[in-house]
Image 1 (spheres, rainbow, N blue to C red):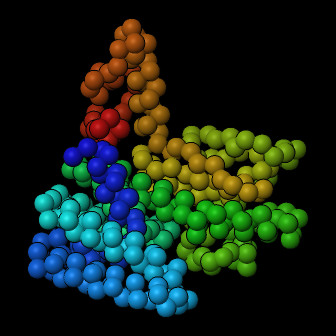
Image 2 (image 1 turned 90 degrees about the horizontal axis):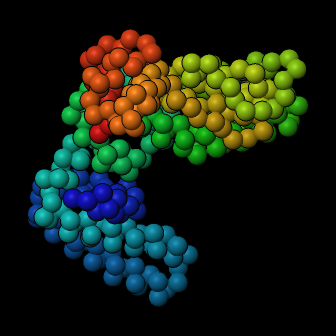
Image 3 (image 1 turned 90 degrees about the vertical axis):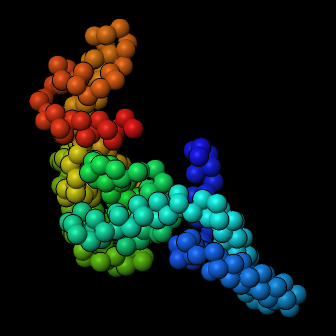
Length: 299
């Protein structure tokens, strides 16, 4: 199956979360699939009748129609490709089970993930190694932090707080009255304020070791720490709106530098195995850890 085909399938899933869960229940049951199509036809008939009556729910019906069409198309797909769909759904379940057994890998922002987010990550990660599971969970955490309910919400609250108080908040919980929707203290307490450096003005975010933000009066809020120091990203919020994201991974930086050094020493040739990088590592890395990271970053 080509990447384009997978992308089209993921796009269809995005049309409706409800359709996703319906298909999850029926992918191994042809009779239920037939029932879903019959119900879709009945819904289409009802929709046409309601349209002629010009009721106030026309906009909702338009969305419903898209959901029905998505369900029908996905139903056709599952008829001949049930094993692959089952595999994708199995990956989603595997990620959720991992979080159930290791709740420290979850961040509270993940409550805003949709089923399509889970499916998107499952489509692009086969989860056949521990490193790939870690990478997939990191991707889910990054998606969760970029959700409008989180990123846009916090950014807007910071702007409104600063306008009302003529300075940024000294504690993230002070943003509570400015958040819409409200966010739990569990989420807010994952962030900390950045003390303003005397004499500094708004400017670019400077970093040390990928996490510590210094020297910018415009940077006011950041994550306290990553969940996975090898795969996660961090996010910094700015007083005047917006945010900046960066790379936490120290091993990633070490490997990237080694890749460049290897290429330079070998007439532009790219390394084909992680073992080739060992003489070029600026800091020693456990070979097993290096191989795991290589398997994720070069798959």
